[in-house]
Image 1 (cartoon, rainbow, N blue to C red):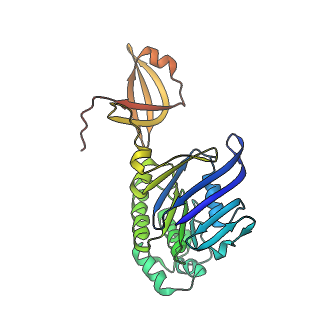
Image 2: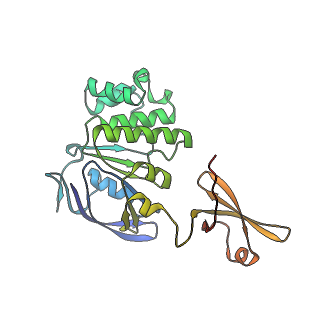
Image 3: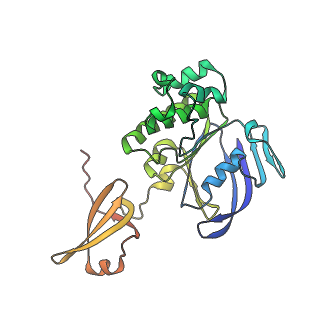
Length: 282
């Protein structure tokens, strides 16, 4: 069990705030961490990694990582950290990037085989695609068989096809090594697919905690479908108004009344829902 009870004053999106987190995470679980920008997600990961100071306590199994002013150095915490920007050493080959963490040829081969990178082990990072570089970063994070794997929006810069492929890689490694994983994400489908638990942060505090379906499925009452997106435009077509809404990677047209059109503003976050719907999946 990982026990986290920490506090820290931060500068958030809306000014000064206090990060106040008290939770327990089961070992071997996959936790998705969500919330608006500036809510404290990255700060929480950095505190867990020992890269930022905080008050309180962090206990991982029978190891104390933080207790009052006593903090275990980052290199002594068995963590893996996957950054959004890969953070690979550009002058080292793929294999050398892994060996920098731990000179274990057998484990490096296992990880490179699992992620289909074996043929690229001697190549430099700048000769690889974004998806390949992120796979190297993931392998490097697993080289010390971490007790805790931390990922800060690791797939946000990738296209949808590569993102889906890397999600498979992450899930495969998570299951193979049984590593407790905490991943920051803003993608509901990604969180639903990968995690067993979703935490939502707002202004430094947990406002929601539950299984992915419970937290992410946004329907109320008799609604059958409900999607959140950004209102891009409202146009008048003959006697009706049509709203253009961006939902994920898709643009959707929705007919709205003149009264609704008056209340809506371009740039707003809106919810598109329906009560009676006969879906077709092709």
